[in-house]
Structure formats: structure tokens, C-alpha cells
Amino acid sequence: MQINGTKALVTGANRGLGKAFAEALLARGATTVYATARKPESIDIPGVVPLRLDVTDQASIDAAVAEVGELDILVNNAGISTNAPLLGPSKENIRREFETNFWGTLDVTRAFAPKLAGGAILNVISALSWYAFAPASNGYAASKAAMWSLTNGVRLELAEQKTQVTALALAIADTDMMAGYDIPKLPPHEVIAQALDGLEAGKLEVIADKPTANVKASLSGDPALFYADIPAALFG
Image 1: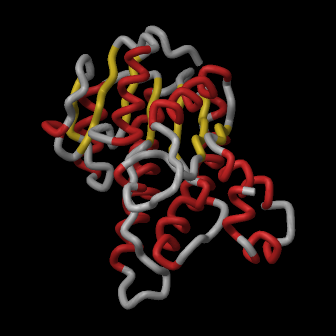
Image 2: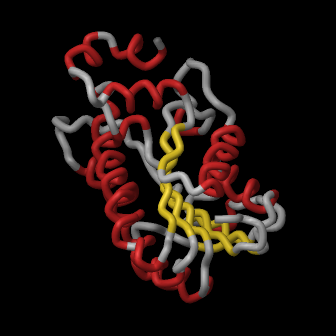
């Protein structure tokens, strides 16, 4: 998958990783980049085509598909974290996380899939797809685990039409979602450079940082060892 000369669409492109994706795609020669958000007026990226897209609203998705037409690259970046524990007093925020992170990704993918023969999809998952860290992140982690499984399933279902499906997994980037954590964070442009290098190299999965690599490697081991000291398992 070569980015130069392609037509791309990025969900959740008004800030953070989504904005960095849109900028990097343009820099790599994409001829058209649709930068989408629920409020397209919030997009301030020179050279992109701002487009309204609410991934939780099927009518909005259908309108975007009609506007865009054929497409080469779809970046499913839109996501939310509500700090919802699984056993809290309400399931409302857990449902919101699944509506955006899982169902939104699936609905956008289903809508654009017929346009992506010979193209590529890149899904932004998380190190939390593979472990639980704290009660306040458990709803988000469950939705991202489901998104990882979705990514693998869609890859198989789109193989016949030769659509490449790549996952970007990361733990800590310097975005609004991670603003409250006083820990070292990767600049978004470094994460995106790795993701797009991997996309162009045909990788099925891009692991962006050491904590994510460590947690992925731990999956074949005894979970008791990992959960006995999570910080050491992530950063050791």
C-alpha cells in the first residue's frame, strides 16, 4: 500500500492522533484527505477536506460515503474513554464506549468496505486491548479488546477483495485523552510515522511503544506474573 496519490479518510481528525494522521497523509502525498469529525468546523488542518461524520450515527455515515465515493485508505481513529468501571452504578458510559470504539468502527468499515478493494484500513487499537489496568479504564479496555478482534475478523473477510487491514497498538501518546497522566508520552507525529510506515510495508500490526510490546509479549505467559507488578511488566 503506497500512500502517494491516494484518497484517504480519517475519523476523529479534529485533534490528537486523528489530526496527526491527516497531516501525515498529506505530507506523504495523498491527493485528497477527508478529515472528519462530528463538528467539521473544529478541523483546522490546511489542505484537507473537512467532513461531518459521527461514527455512532448511521445516517451521518451514509452521507459521508455518498460524499466521498471511492476510497483508498480508511483510518478508524475515532474513539472515546469515559473512565467507566465495569461494575459501577451504571452501564451507560460502557455502552457509549462500545458504541464509538467497537460499533462505530464496525459501521464505518461496513459502509466503506465496498469502496476499498485493493486499498487499506488502519484501526487504532490500544495496549489495553490485551490487559486491564485500573477500574476506571475497564470499560474502555473491553471495547478496545473487541476492536482488536474486529480488526482481525474484518481482515479475513476482506482478503478476497485485497483490502489490507492493519492495527496500530499503542499505550501512551501525548493526546488530550492522556493529558491527566504525568508519565513519558510519545509525540503523536512519531506514533503516526510508525503507523504509516507499517501500512506501506504491509504489516498487519504496528506496535508503537515499549509498554505495548511488553504487554503483547506477556500474553503467552502466566497472567499472575504480569498482574503481580503491572508497572514493571509494562516498563521493565
